[in-house]
Amino acid sequence: MSDVRVRFAPSPTGPLHMGGVRTALFNYLFARKHRGTFILRIEDTDQTRFVPGAEDYIIEALKWCGISPDEGSGFGDGPFAPYRQSERKEIYKTYSEKLVDSGWAYYAFDTPEELNDIRSKYEAEKNTFIYNHTTRQNLKNSLTLSADEVIAKMENGEPYVVRFRMPENETVTINDIVRGEVSFNSGDLDDKILFKSDGLPTYHLANVVDDYLMQISHVIRGEEWLPSLPLHALLYRALGWEDKRPDFAHLPLILKPVGQGKLSKRDGDKMGFPVFPLRWNDPKTGEIASGYREDGYLPEAFINMLALLGWNPGTDQEIFSLEELSNLFTLERVGKSGSKFDPEKTKWFNHQYLVNLDNHKLAGLYLPFLKEKGISVGEEKLAYICGLVKERATFVQDLWDQSSFFFAAPESYDEKTVRKRWKEQTPGLMKQLIQVLENVDVFDAEQSEEAVKNWITENELGMGAIMNAFRLAIVGEGKGPHMFDIIAVIGKEETIRRLNKAIEVLP
Image (cartoon, rainbow, N blue to C red; front, side):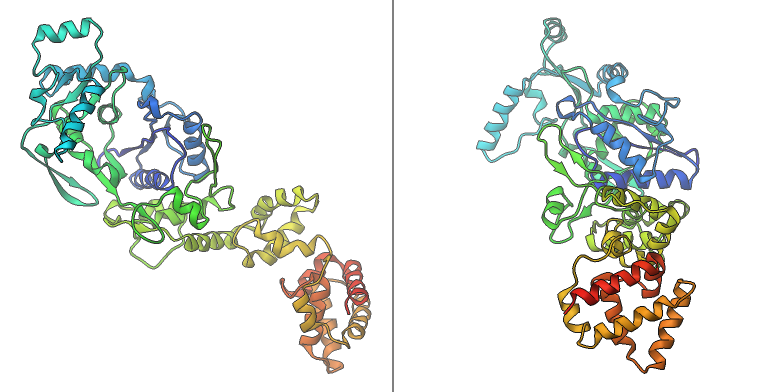
C-alpha cells in the first residue's frame, strides 16, 4: 500500500459526539496499522454554526483519548498547514473559478427569498423542488443569463453562489471499502452549492480540495456522508484529479440502546449516560452535558468500547490495548450495519481496565477525591488499599464507598447487619477478641489472622459469628475485603478502639 494519509475533519459546531470520536479512532488505527499519517483538519467554513470553544474541545478530547494526530490544528504544523479551513479560503476560490471556466459549475444569482417562493409553489402542488437539470434552465444563473448580464450583476455587487453542474443522467459507481460497490444516478441529485456568497466554500468543495492538496489516501467517515459521495467523486473528475481520488470507507452508525435510529444526546439524558467524551458547557445556553472523563471513565476503556462498535476483531477477545488495536485493525472487518450502544457494557469495560490498572496509578487517580475530603495518606499505603478494594469498583469514585473505613471509623452501623450479626453474646465475644489482638506482637494480616483463628478453633466458636460481628465493628456494615488486611492497614490501636466503641454503642 502506498503512503497512507488519513484525516479527521470535524466542524467546530459543538461538542464532539462519541460517534465522531470513533471516526477519529478508526482513522488513527488505520494510519498506525499502515505506518501512515493521521491529520486533524478543522472544517469551519460554516461560520453561522461556529461555536466558540468547540475547536479547543475537539483537541482536548483527542488528547484525553490518546489518539493524537501527527499533524494538524493544535498538534503542530505539518507540510500542508494551515489546517483550519477558514485560513485557507483563498485557495478554494481558485478552484471554484476553475470549475466554472470548465463548465462543471456555474454562477447562481437566485436570492434565498426567490428560492423559498419556488419551494412553496412546488409544495402546494405536492412536489419537491430540486435545483438541478430539470429546473436550472428556468432560474437566474449563468446558464440562462448572457455573459454581459452576469458581468453586470457581479460588478453591481449582487450576491451569488457557485453551484456544481450535476450531469443529467449518469450512473456514478464507486467502490466503498466497507459497503462494496455503490451506485447513484446523477439525475436524482441536486446542483450543490460549492462556493457561498460570504466568500467561503461549502464543505463539499473545501474537503475535496483539501483532501487532494493534503494528499489524503483514504477518506474514512460516517455513513451520513454517503449521499455526498457521488458529488465528491465527480468533483475529482471535474478538477482533473480522478487518478488521485482517495479510497472511501463509510462507517456504520452508532445506534440507540433501545428502539431505532442514531444515538443522540437525548438518549443519554434519558438513560443516564454521556454521549460526549468530555463535559461540555454550552456557551450559548449555559447547558452542561456530561462527559465520560468527568463521569469517571478511563480513556483506555472508552476507546476499547468504541473500537468494538462497528469493528469485529474476528475472535472472542474483548480487551485490547491501543497498540493491539492498531496491529489488528482493518477496514474490511468494519460492518455495514449500525451497532447498538450498550451503556452497561461500557461500565463493564471500565471495570476491567480499573481492576487491571497498576495500583500506584490508581492511587494517583484516587488521591484527589481524598484530598477533597481533607484526608492525607501515603502513596504506598493508598496503593495497597486500592489493590484490596478495586475488584468491587467500576469507577475511581466508587473506591470511596469501598474503602472509606480505612480512613475513618464508622459513624453508624447498618441496621440490617446489626440485627443479623450482633447477638446477645456478641459483646462478650468481642471483649475476648480484643484480648487476643492485644497479644499479637507483629500486627500484620498473617499474624493477626493466625491468632484469631487459633482462638476460635480452641474455644469451638463459630467462625461466622465472630468474623461477621468483627467486620460490623470495624467497617460498619457487612462488606469490604479480607478482615485481616483491613486491620493490618488501620493498626492495632485503631482496631481495638473500634471494637470497644461497637461494644459500647450497639445493643
